[in-house]
Length: 155
Image (cartoon, rainbow, N blue to C red; front, side):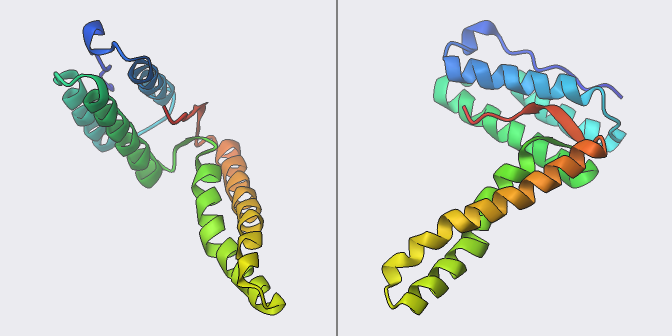
């Protein structure tokens, strides 16, 4: 089964950010053609693309819908096949590291020093831990051939 291509009319893509997001989605799908995915996953991706192709939304609404569909496709690929774009895990773990590691370290440091204002010292420490974990997971995904050759930019 083949993945269908997004086919929006050029007059809907007047906004530069929306146009960049649309091109990024096209790149993801072209990169995905080189990977092995199940027919069930292709059918789910095709249903998302069919919704995009049939839309008449414009400007911010179109941008929002394209972003949502792109995120749905990436989450589906990660869940079903562990296929991810470049730096996916790094970006995911950056925030998780700040919350899961940084805040507790900052609270402990602040309480030890008797000044809870030092709470913010833990955030960059947690961020560094998160980036380290995420980067190692990205390297592992690349070594196993589960990485798409595209980095997702937040437009």
